[in-house]
Length: 393
Image (cartoon, rainbow, N blue to C red):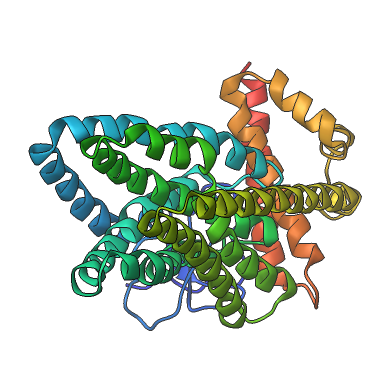
């Protein structure tokens, strides 16, 4: 039976059991109460009880099963090559992961969402792209698969991973879009590199391929997909059409991906090493331009967050100590470093809740009271959890 209507949000005391209840703000039919407060998970529907919110989506589960079976079959027939490819495929992960974590410091995303993004790229995008590219290669040739099919299907399927985060209300602005693009692309790149390195080992070209993909261009896929994340993030921040922005974002991702693959394919078929040098130079230039752009965006996000701390203190009753910590970026980072590791997650939750509220107040137009109360509840629960951890010392 459907729970009784709740005219006002229950206080976040944990007394109300988790479940679907009438949305107290009437912005949807149902809203999920997690036992401590309202969450962003809503459901439009009638009397039928919706499914419980789950961070691990059905496409990821199915993709993981299919990819796992494929890897088992690959290992059975190419044991040595698969082992070497799997080991070397983790090298780009070690290089790219710290950078994505650094980018995500402005508004830390939930680890469950980060893991889901990586899995989406590694199992859903990689598996679907592998099927399409194989079919195109068999019917039209390897060149068509590399230059036409791969950029289109890979960037679209990776973009769907960012869209999943958007549907879960995890994308609040430009930096979130870029970060989720990076996580999805990282998962895809790891699986693709494993297959490339395994093939290169059998073709006696492992050193060249490893240097090119793992050491020189580990950020290739994150750089391509960043266009999609940038477009979606801008749409959210400016309250524009996500679909319209995604068109040019995915288009630029496909174009940059296709240009890179095309130059490598041309060089491989003609033996023109100069084409590789030119393509690598262009990629390096694009990479540094992207790095500078991301640093500028990140610093701007930091400044805007710091500028809004007094408003957050006024509207949500932050203590002078909290204002002092979160109102100074360097002090905030130093405070986190000095905390025991067991208390850092609670600190990050407070920081993330404040960052989401700051992004909310920065959006154009009239603020939505329902969303503001929901975000305020998340902040209240995060502060309570941090206080409980402090008292347990």
